[in-house]
Image 1 (cartoon, one colour):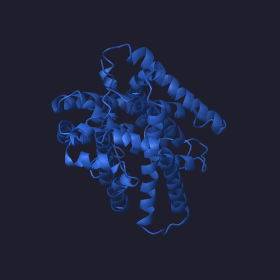
Image 2 (cartoon, rainbow, N blue to C red):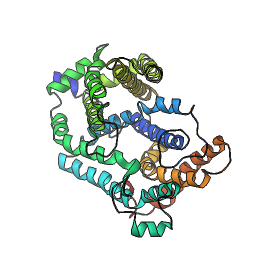
Image 3 (tube, rainbow, N blue to C red):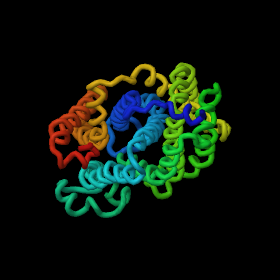
Image 4 (cartoon, rainbow, N blue to C red):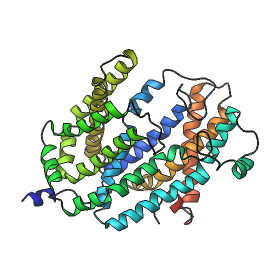
Length: 379
């Protein structure tokens, strides 16, 4: 009976609400990177006028935007393993993650590094000369070889390959103890709290000791945090309909708790430098965890509908992700020293990034078979 219960989970090839969330969050990533051009935080190039106020909405988004992407990736893995063996899944991950990563590091990222070197006065000369002589010497930031915004790909590839045997076992044995436990726990009013403890310990003890680098090697805080979120996404999908019903039914209190938690974290971390060390990470985790659950709930309630638009966007989102930051940096370089209002520059960067990415996808990547695998687009 237990196995029958767990196996009544939804079994479509796609859950369209997850597709919509993925597209929307990657779209938010583009807006976030445009914002990085204008805030006082360290980034590759900067506008000649900066905004202190813009950092607050960006801090709000920053607490959950990457976390939800790793959870969505874990959920997508659960769906993918429903129609693939472990070996097929591993080969597919290598094709769709490693190939675009290598291509991106060779072709997409170097223009960003070149423009950064020009702005900082560390290089003078043409891009062709930089590409031939200097682009692939040394590791960034001392050298020029980098994956920049594509750091998400090696982390996701590592997690996918390391966890593949565990995930295959869970998929083939849906009545395993962990899945049975979760399918019951998520129906309880406080059941979702079981995920908070490992996330809290990660935030409390790893985050202060291992600042975020996105270098993979030695980036222990990010490695553990995103590993946990990726595994959580897969596990919650394995819990079946109980999870989706729970977040759909409790979406309002979840979202409200998340918003209040994130706002409390921003206020307390900004105003009280000596705030108790273990309490602030707990507020942070409660904020982003319930924010994510609330977004899953609203998406399950309102976005789980197939349409031609989501089919198109779901195919385009990966090329947009690979291309977008280079386009933003190039456009930013062209306007950074202009005396135009920041609002005008922001609109130019937003419209230009989305527009140029769409043109490249629609008229080149989508139509030229040789380009499709380089951007992770399926044949």
